[in-house]
Amino acid sequence: MAEKNFVRSMFDNIAPTYDKLNHILSLNIDKIWRRKAVKRIVKNLKNSESENLKSSQFLRFSNSQILSFSNSQVLDVACGTADSTIALAKAGIPSVTGIDISEGMINVGREKISALKINNINLKVEDCENLSFDDNTFDAAFIAFGIRNFEDKKKGLRELKRVLKDNGHLLILELSVPQNKILLSLYKLYFLNILPFIGKKISGDDKAYTYLPHSVINFPKPKEFMQMMEECGFKNVKQKALTFGLCRIYEGF
Image (cartoon, rainbow, N blue to C red):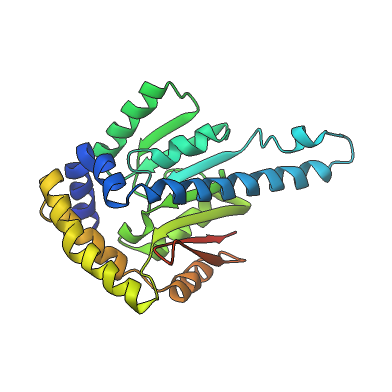
């Protein structure tokens, strides 16, 4: 279990070098994973909007209008330096709120958003397990590489269920341990030895890049995590492995 104050302090410390290291250490594959996840969120929002409009007895729309998801609000949880938040906004979602427990990470995200002149994003420092938002606020919620850092994962998932609208979509993108024995050996060699060495050299933090690999290895197995989502009230829960199981998409409603 990740201790909240430790996680906050750690990410504050590595915020200035986080983006550079993240892309180097993942060989930029994280960008591909994030694009896949954002596409799934957008597709579901479009489908939901389409169903809502088709059910109206008074209005007729063209296909392009049906797929506009013009009123959708999406919450990007544990948004870090706002890479996912920016991707969601660029995908056309009109209102994106990014939250993170680390003020240092949020500040880096604000600088990026300002430089890009994006105006449909709101970033806030928030504890993801104690959200300030009203019930039934968001159409979808996204967590990219952050759920493993929650101190109490069940509490965080229940909070997300609370702030999502009826049939709201939760999509979680998280690093995973490959099942193939050969890949697993290479994975552990890289993740437990090479990654911490490079991370320490660039960031100057001797704890963060030791903690991060162990947080992935100790994350619940796919079936266990899916069961956790169901216990917290999510339905139609499923998962999909990406890149030989190095990452997984979990989603539910």
